[in-house]
Length: 548
Image (cartoon, rainbow, N blue to C red; front, side, top):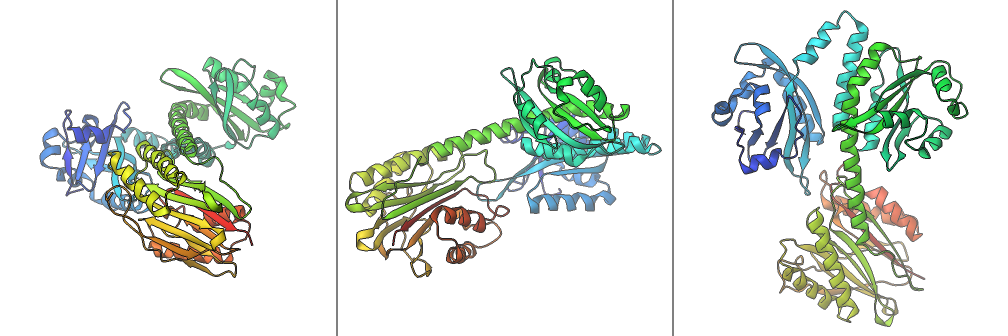
């Protein structure tokens, strides 16, 4: 911490205000953003109060923060920081700070690591709060094992929900946390209201008939989850009481004796938008555990609301990306084509990868694959325009070299600061060859009829955009009957953990032993080569097989 500049004050500068814009504001929770490259730590007023720093100390003596962490806690603080940075995960940490009054106060910090499209550490976004109530509650229950277990539940589930990004992850957090004590979660159902209907978002453990009935239910129906959404009131029942109160469930649920049910309304910003149903082993939920669940329902609601926004944004981004790719690929008696697109792990953003195929005269087919710099709507918009322009140039009858050259000038004239890489291969079955032009992009990988595979050393030009007067050379390579060509974006072979040449070699070896049917081959290459743990980019894959 000692080398960082801390930007304090209520009147944060533009950079600090922007940095803290993504930090949620809750009472008693302060926002903190660390930007390692700039050596800055932005803290809002609440964070300064939690950390015991005045504005002057923030601006002039940032080392005061590190000096106040108790020496015995410092190794744990740095170990957790290193773990989060190395593994690029969220973090949650309790530590003690020595305040000006001389007392050591427990503080809780949690957040996440954010990297840019190239995988470089961009910032760490987090929140801090006074954790003394947590510790006091734990200490007050040391003589009460049940109370201590419930305190553990609160901490464990809160941490898990903080790290959950999707609805599925929220559901998994509820299952994994369990309910420490006499009851343990065996089934979970999470739903929300959607124009008068109950929309089941996720479920675990409930029998299929009950799940089907829930999918077809309405908010007005006399069912536990529907009533929780409609009334905003929680319900706790044992199995017998559930069947007595809702006899229509008798044919949907097995006749268990020792099962308890909790139905919690999910309320945020004063509106009940959904409900979560929990089924426990060991009978009805005891009173203490009911209190804990009611206290946690607000945290669950906030996590689910955030996850819904993430999932919907992700779905919209994927839909936008898919709509800009060709709905179908042209097939001929001589050529069979297949393609795949997989968004990056941070799929709530839109990528700039694309592929295309265009029928040309004399039985030829042009294959195009490219990547516009960036992961945002601008990149997708540029991609759409560039794809359309390149398709038009090819349709007008321009050669592969001329079409790519014109596309580069078109991109430069758009006035954008984005560049693009692209590879264009015109397959000519009549001549047993392919004309290849590439601008800063990977060349073609070909598997010949005899099984021999090779990355062809096609000379390449500069990426499209920055150098509009530069032309890319044209190269002809063999493409005889029975051959298969693979074009891909670098997301398939590139990784933060290995050199790109390692990925290219892995793809070549995978192609040598891969199955022959083209659709099966496309799935195989995408799953066998791509490294989800080390990949931070979109993947576009385009394959062409020439009939024998």
